[in-house]
Figure 1 (cartoon, one colour):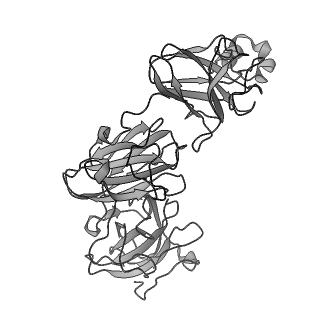
Figure 2: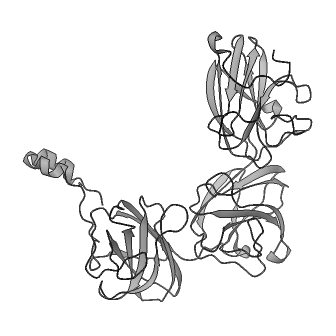
Length: 442
């Protein structure tokens, strides 16, 4: 637990200042020793604390393996199981590389390991599961991977999720939303399909959600922010035996999260399964969903103003309109998941737009026209630079309105978009850049 010792001593004991500057400014945790653990209770819970300045005891086991190889900066907790059943403990959200052990016994040098773990998921935190017996007292130790690993500890515990089975799916609603959950201790049911790429024939540690939209629309579902490598799928059907997969995904982007988009029908119930890439991938789930962006269609283009600016947007669940052109290099015949912006030029000159900082492989194009089927393309670009972003430069005339479309390279490229624009000064209009791919640069 962080201490105010340092700041208080500066005021009251100035002669000790040189000594305290070399100290850590932390108290030794009250639960540093096995004999003085913090007491935990309840079937689920979370506690925040610290292992800074904690020490190891003689005969204390290493908590990554449960063997007597030595601990580093461990702290202790005591938990008496309220009932029989499987239970988990994890350190997700802690600020350092943790290890975690659960034991029975009466002394630190004579413990019996029930479960131990070093790393799970993608963040060097730890997770253990074990079968608890009602009335039995268990001792839980949180340590660092080595002596340098100290910091803030978040210790959570709980039982199997209530939406483990298809028939107990958690109901979600609304055009947009987000819900937190867990697949720790979840199981696969008989006849349950694989929710990722379909290579395996079965699920692993899945949980279920149900969603019934009130109107026809496209929707996205994603697991960005979850603590493990997820898979995600959407189904129609009334039982595991008659499910029809509408969409499925393993990885999107670079964080092992998952994303699916769905063209949904009003008053139809869809079932969403979140699973791990394999049986080891368990942890905290963040499930988000939403409809198409407000500027999905040309007629609803987001108006930009000023001589320069940067806007954040998304093309999640965006769609292509009938007669909408491809916005990249022209090889494709149609758009994919495009969004639109309009800009009324404040002065004549050269202007540049780019998608630097976007999380997807973008395409970018500028047009003149008054409707989707009367557009004249001025310039387009697929890739510029080394990060799959896009840039265009074109001439504008004062008080004329231009339209800019941002799309993904294909229908899989959906996510957060950053669009920036600015006028070019007269002396740098000849900098290397992507110029018009058609002769209509006016």
